[in-house]
Image (cartoon, rainbow, N blue to C red; front, side, top):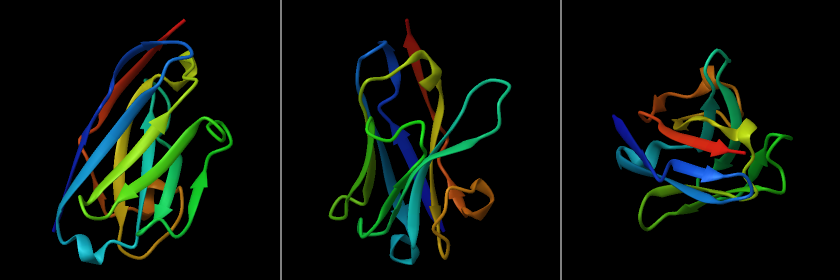
Length: 123
């Protein structure tokens, strides 16, 4: 069993920055990869960035490359998403997720999910 708890969302103006955190509890040793997803109202959930456990590899959606950075603190069992140059189109609920055997940005390949944290960017 695994529990994921996100924090760090909020409201910012365009061009601003936020850092999301995702603390993991439980069977963390079984995690193969982690990812951040987001879902805006009326839209499908989309992958933002993912990382092999330990940060050995990372991958980003084209829409966030150069602006977002995914990272991990293994001592704290925490995943981060640093978001810079935020734009109104980044407004969504952001979720972290953990997979036990996959490395992708496909939501259906993730086994555990956090409750989500809201990010709102105003123009």
